[in-house]
Length: 313
Ligand SMILES: [Zn+2]
Image 1 (tube, helix red, strand yellow):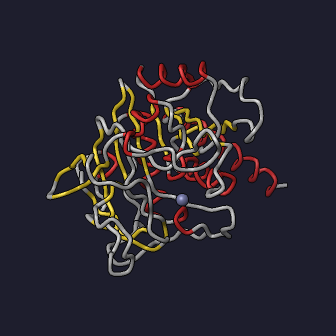
Image 2: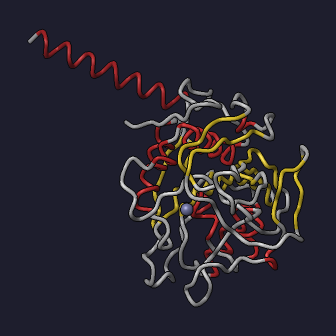
């Protein structure tokens, strides 16, 4: 009986503690929007991990919004963007209805937050406002269902040369990437809230270095870059490619991570997605997109210049 009472007391205390915690730190509403991939990626593998990473911060109340599947009628897809401080999009699929696109543009212009990862770079090549939001993108589905819509006419490539961003509109070549491997991600804008405390260089695990992305490239701050080793990957660009970007669009903020490849045939662990560097930059980027600030401290397991760091549990 004594034990029973003690359990009750502990449970009551825990409830009080939880209530106080929620009262002290209101959760920020974030939408995770997902539901379609091209044949090269698999949102059913990446989106649940992204959801868990956002939940782990304790900062966000995350609602998952799933589009109709590929080929299904999209007419009724019209989520209430305005209810959320940020929209995290893991999506590479069919166009949304015009009214939904217009609502998303209005949401962003009024100060909304957007976070995109890897495969989302390839969404909506023919949506001009979207291209402005993400700054630069790659590939993209053509009307015939093939991949590779984004070409020279979409805009310049962003390069980091001699300590600054260069807009390269003359070198030919469109989106590409070397085979997956571990590579250093180099901090370029250390003072940005997302990047504070992050090492000058850290080793990201087994991912694709998205290269030669193109777009309007307006109002982009390049936060971090990566360079493929041409001795190992002779067809690599030899350029410092933007990996993490912060973009302003109207009053809105966009955190754009090119990291996070997972393909339909991959088996867990999905190495690029369980990299602590991917996780932490996503968590911080989401807080920044939602609020303009970052309160999260850098965890002890962040990768170093020499060693990747995987969260395998
Ligand atoms: Zn990929």
